[in-house]
Image (cartoon, rainbow, N blue to C red):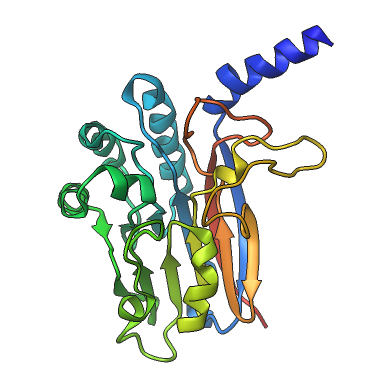
Amino acid sequence: MLAGAAGSVANGFWIEPDYLSITRQDVSCKKLPAGLDGLRIGLIADLHYRPDQDAGLLEDVVARIQQEKPDIIALAGDYISADPGVISPMLACLGNMNATHGIFAVMGNHDGWAGNAAIFRQQFEKAGISFLINQHSVLSIRGESLAVAGTDFVWLGRPDPVKTMRGISKNTPILALVHEPDYFDTMCAAREVTLQLSGHTHGGQCRVPLLDVAPKTVKHGRKYVYGNFSNEDSRLFVTRGVGTSGPRLRFACPPELAILTLRASS
């Protein structure tokens, strides 16, 4: 028993936080135009970047996502925990990514608490990453339109789904980026979204093996903790994220790079 406990502690603190996993999943989306079938999205969230501890993990994330060659890369917030000074070295690495139809980012709650949104936008866009705060961008892909819509962070931020999606034509599918997943219901009340991508929960960060449940959850991430969900024709995917909040600890919940392939449902 003592050996097992020691092994679990060693895994949680020193092995699993650096053990990057890749989740490859097809996501069936109702009303998705046939021309967008097969579109591949790389999702990264919750880096909580600490240069002295996470540099190797971040380099691995960037190398692996480049190997996957996604059409779009989505960054779903919480790039830092508290120190805005780490944005620059983090972006020096993230700036090496590229995707056929662009890289899009939104604010996380820790980003909003620790830094100025204008500074985030300025630095991210200088690195070639579109930064959306209650805004959207309409892409033309294979003869079809796709709106990428990103809100402000929810927890003490000022998200505005109506403003975010205003002007998107009725038949244009929407890829929504919202840091906190429980806002999914509010987004759907404003308008149907093809797929919302979120982080925030870290999948619980520590889960109970075999039962696969997270004993601890976080505000705005209690209803939708990890995985796939739906609200009528709208879909949601919540990633486990990459980094850690609080102690650098993960258990039965390794860092995740998600590669999602959109599929037009019949």
